[in-house]
Length: 123
Image (cartoon, rainbow, N blue to C red):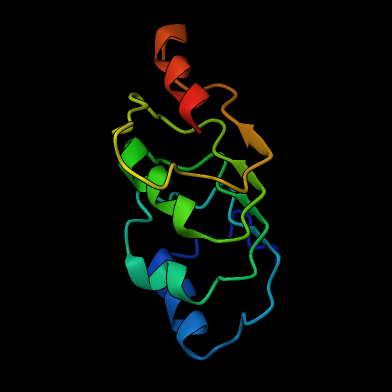
């Protein structure tokens, strides 16, 4: 499903999801929609088959929102490039580790230092 630059909100997508419109959806493109956060747990519940998620070019600034996407059980590819992410953090004592199925993570053009990227070694 490609919804780039449609300015669809997470709430609108959740309405579609509550109608079970995405039971086997594997790809979701939401680039350039002005999305600030995806911390709504309901958004994640119906996307159990999702393998690819493109959130590039939005306004997501908190890694805690991105980290919640690790609850998507089949997510293999995540694009959060060109978001104003300023902090990558994760409590490394928690189990299970996040993003166990992730194979590709695009962090191009984000505002974090190289030292913060070291946390990704725990994923």
